[in-house]
Amino acid sequence: MRLVRTIAEVRAALAEPRRADEQIGLVPTMGAFHEGHLSLMRQARAQCDHVVVSLFVNPSQFNESSDLSAYPRDEACDAALAAEEGVDLLFAPTVEELYPAGFATTVSVAGLTDELEGVHRGRAHFAGVATIVTKLLNIVAPHVAYFGQKDAQQALVIKRFVHDLDIPTRIEICPTVREPDGLAMSSRNARLDAEQRGRATALYRALRSAEAAVAAGERDPAAVQARARAELDGASVEPEYLELVSAQTLAPVTAIDGEVLAVLAARVGNTRLIDNHLIAKNGRRHDAADDAQVEDPPGDRDRL
Image 1 (tube, rainbow, N blue to C red):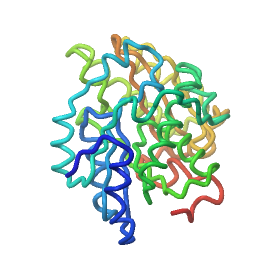
Image 2 (image 1 turned 60 degrees about the vertical axis):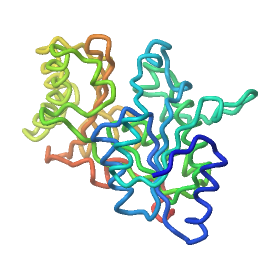
Image 3 (image 1 turned 135 degrees about the vertical axis):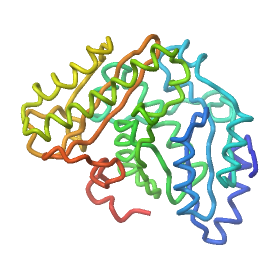
Image 4 (image 1 turned 180 degrees about the vertical axis):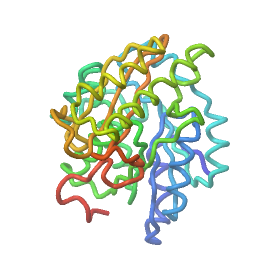
């Protein structure tokens, strides 16, 4: 595996694979690798000839400076893990490399960014995400880029701007990877102490409780939410939001007459966690690997 720091090095390293018409896959990350990241790398390795992983803690998507400064960083460990997964190129740029003096452009997506995380973190958060992902797609020019379903709203936003801006990259959304007790894997989990770690499992229990309510025949979103909320209350976890929304538009549903996405965010101690789960109308467990979880925008299914 080769570690590079500059845009010029990335493009030079990919020149030969591109000439050879090799499939190039990109896994954008902010580091602190866990099994969720590694699963994306494995998927890229299985599907692509050349795998690039970016490692960059993007300051423009953080709302709080304390959260940015506390974000875990261990480049040496990350590099070793990426090498074990067969990654070909690890791109670990500086802030100055990606945001040089005079940088003045932002990519912003309307509509999808107004709900959920957009309410609590602001649309600027998603503008930061959209801008850095656009830059990475332009720098690497991959055939496929891999993201996790845990960040469901982010996945929809990325698919939207890739479609709208005619970026010739296929976006693949991979299943959420969970701990044995159901907690979605996240770099932020390391900031939970033992007591908080136990309480955090209530997030997934709440989502599964919502699913169980639908399976039992409940079609009133408020009643389903109440079942889920009871799980959080039992663990003394106060959600920032707990919603049943359309998996395509994120609009709140008024009745459960098809698939719905259960989404929630909550702070456990000082650590903010998010999770989601797609629920079928009959309550059948719906794995995140299914295509319906995050659908392509109309007309996008045949893109690269």
